Length: 190
Image (tube, rainbow, N blue to C red; front, top):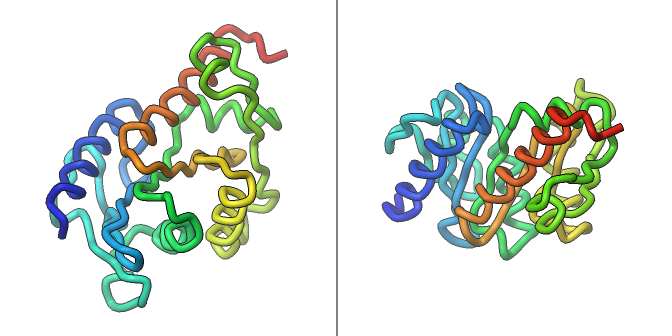
């Protein structure tokens, strides 16, 4: 595997775990190696201490390795195939963001950085969670491509984000989470 990409994933996943964006067995993070290959965490990865054995390199041609990979691997693959500028992808479950989405259809940040960097954000409603994983790869990829957004906030589920720079990816998730936290704590969302 590409040592540079592996080290970037390890470093960012630790930071994101410490911020509670990635949990124990919850979330996924990947990096594109080439047009048809990417590195992603395995399904049993714990993000505060990723090692080389917690990551796996997959190709677009599914083989035995896919059974060890994150449940989100199909979603990552679909985004990489459809969005050329996606170099890194993350599925995160920041608690304030997920909580805020349950009772809202959009996020309008009231804090300076959220308002200046993000503006109004629509929340995607998957409607039915019973068949979400059967639809998620197509719906997430289509949304990101059609809206030309680098992230998608999904009601009661979390954030899918991509970027060419792994630090910008993490920054966007942190901005969203901080804005939702401020909205909840200040109770100004009414």
